[in-house]
Length: 415
Image (cartoon, rainbow, N blue to C red; front, side, top):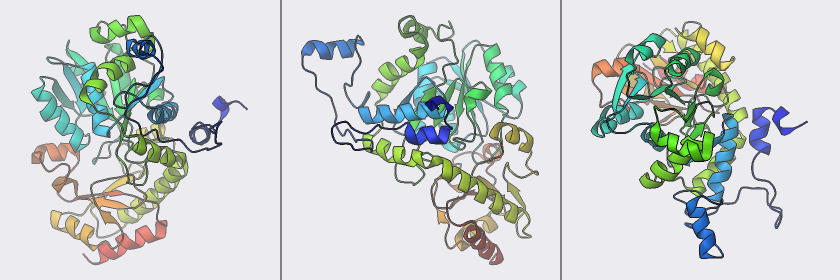
């Protein structure tokens, strides 16, 4: 059996660092070095000029990061990847590679609040304009396209609205107009490969499920190898295409934007996430199963108004989620309690779930989006993003499912 015949979960484990020939060590080394030496000045010159391969400076590349990037490239069946300091750094670097002053992007209106703020505020100051559209309507993306549109950005699942866009339908619009489709797959690693549905670039905040233990921050940009970078819509990348062909996007990103913004990833964090990556398959199975159990319990409880989880038949996007996710619906859900006061009380009554603005941890986490990562937006924007005042977001952890349910049961009883 060849490696390509193995399941992705197996390849994530076996496709890591091979045993070191000198010591026999099987764990990925941490190359905690700022820069890398060469025998001659000419050798260093050749690497800087791109005439030969090699590592220069950890702000640009590093052997530990290279190994991590290769494994994440395999996760999304891409052609290459660049690891970044955080998920937000990965998104920022990607957009700045595709667009510049005077350009335009189109985004789903239900994206994570931090990304929404980047597009609405920071990129606007750089004269990169964003049109936010309803991700449930592929025609809305097409209607927003202009001559200067450089990217369409969506998430496989909105956060915290937990809607599920039709990736293929949106990809068809992007391809019709020769525009790059960027998909943030942070919430559904292994559950879906956006490339299969037409994505060109896939992004992860590796701080979440890929890491899985809440102890490191990171992000990654993966080129699926599906876009023709000789396109006149991206003349700055087209210049690189003439030299490195289908690696043009990654070449421009790493050698220009990534290098100049200093969004570099820590080798130690890459080491921690490489360990997390090896258990991603079993963690996602357990967390998805527990999420179904908790969502079903909450939906049937008399003290809740409604539950938002794509695995429930009551979810508006349940059908498309089933088609795209293959029977696993992620480990993130949301519950509405009717009022802000009841939502806050539910959170405060919990005895074991931890209150913090993160997700994808081994521990069950809860947060109130309207007063945390969505707090700076207007009520109208918060509602569009799926963050009403009475909503609690739950990231289901690895605890025994009955214990998670029991914690929420006692909290609801105390309301």
